[in-house]
Image 1 (cartoon, rainbow, N blue to C red):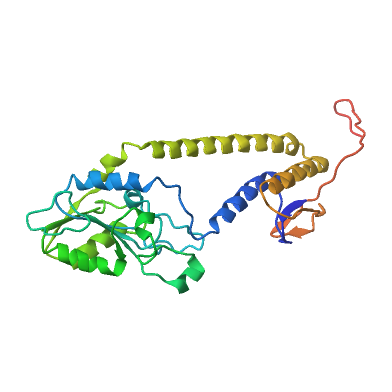
Image 2: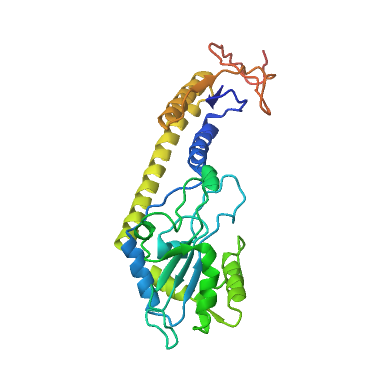
Length: 314
C-alpha cells in the first residue's frame, strides 16, 4: 500500500516514512513563495537603534542589505542580512544604508537628514515575477520605511564619494578573519567601499552593533516567546502523531498497515493537502513501485501448530 497526494506519482510506501514525507511537503509548500514578509517592530524601534549607534561614532556607517543573488537554489527564500534588518526592519533585496554621526564633524556642513535608506529603482517587469517591491518613488515611502530620506540605490556611491571629502574614515561590518563558507557579503561591501573612497580608512562597526543586540526589546522578546511556543507545540504534536503511527504500524499485518495509512491520510488532509488517496499495490514479490519491488507477503488467518517431542520430526 502507498499514499499519494493529488497525483499518480509512483512512490514507495512505508507509513513511518510518509510522516516525514508529509512534513516535507508542508515545508516545501511554504518555501514555494519567493519572498515572505517578516514580523517587524514599529519604525520607531529601528530608528532608536540607529540613533544609539550614531551617538557612538565619529564617521559615517555604510551598510548593504543582501542582494537576493547570494543563493542560486530554486527553493531559496530571501532573508535580509541580520544586522541590516536589525537597524532598518527592511526585508527586501538590494538596499543600502548610510548613518552619519549624531554630532557633525568640523568640516561637515550638511544640514540635511543624518541617515538615508537607498532602495532599488522601480522595476515593473521584474515585479511580474518577484512581486511588488518598495522603491524610492513610492508615495509615502518615508512613512513606510521610517526614514526621512529615501533615495535610489544608484546614488549611494556618489553619496559616499561626497562624504569622503569630509570624513577620513568610514565604518562598516568587516569580514571575519576566517570565514566558515557562504557568500562573502561583508567582503563585497568593503571592496566596493574601497573603490568608492580609496583614500579612506575602513573601520569595523560589528562590536557596537553586537553590543546593542545583546539587550532585547519587548518586541524581540515577544517574537522569541512566540517562536518557542510554536516549536514546543509542533514537537508535542509530532510526538502524538508518532505514537499513533507506532500503535498500529508495529504490528506487521495488512489490516494494521491499512489503519496506519488511513490515519496518515487523515493527518495529511488536516494539514491542508487535497485529494489524498490510498493506492493498493500487491505484495506479490514482483510488482515494482518506483525503485522498490514489493515483497512477497501474506496474512495468516488460520494455522495449526504441531508440537513434537525433542529429536522427532514430522
